[in-house]
Length: 329
Image (cartoon, rainbow, N blue to C red; front, side, top):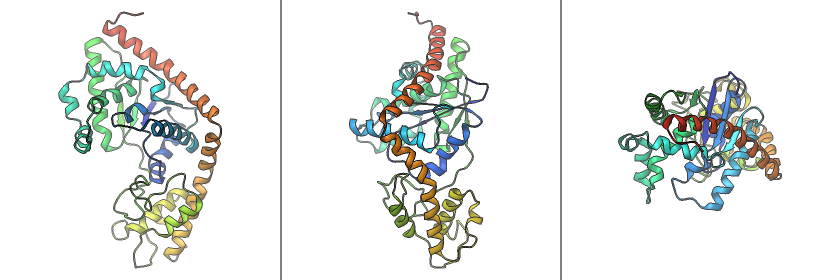
């Protein structure tokens, strides 16, 4: 590892990635590689907190890893791996489960939200914050880029880390939650009051990173605007138009307020937005399908990442087990 700050981020393999995921988060993942030591993990074990179809889970895990590489995560510069390929994560999770209190886990907001909606509530759904903590602390992580909805989990991770260190001596680095630079806030094309979500939830309002050119054009041409006809950025009074300008600006590297200059009507705005999105996604899709057609290359890169991750994780876990008083082999 270098002297750069170390950043860890995990992504669950659930659903196809869409334009909002890319412009809102993944572009920042790619940019971080220039200034940070980055570890990116496909957290397939977290997906098991809810029942999964085995073949779908396998396919979505592989597809997500390929897409992360396609958008610009460089396995030579960063560590990219599948969570279940590094068994230290589950072993360290038990140490964190034994460090957390029942009350702390019960108070987690996401557990309350998901358990209220689920027909079957697994024990893993209750304890998964301990696995999430282990994901982070195994790598002596300095920073974890999170949205507000994940801040509670990082606070718990900090509490568990400090408690463990106080009981058994300095063992883990206490991570810091950082709110990443604001990416483009991409809204649903059919309901610009809601964030863009998975295509299964809003087929016409979401653009998948794998949509073909014709589909992208059709979805953007059908995007909700208004009856005024003026191409200006005003997210309060013109949310649909402003959403298209945000997408156009993010795709072309412009401020959304400047992206519409020279466009006289909504037809031109939609045409320019569709063209820019297609051009932006073209190299991503090309690289993705290269990897799909060469599974051995994907496997090679993922094994390389798992080996790099295990080298660090095993050292950290051995240190924790030694400090705990567990007898070495």
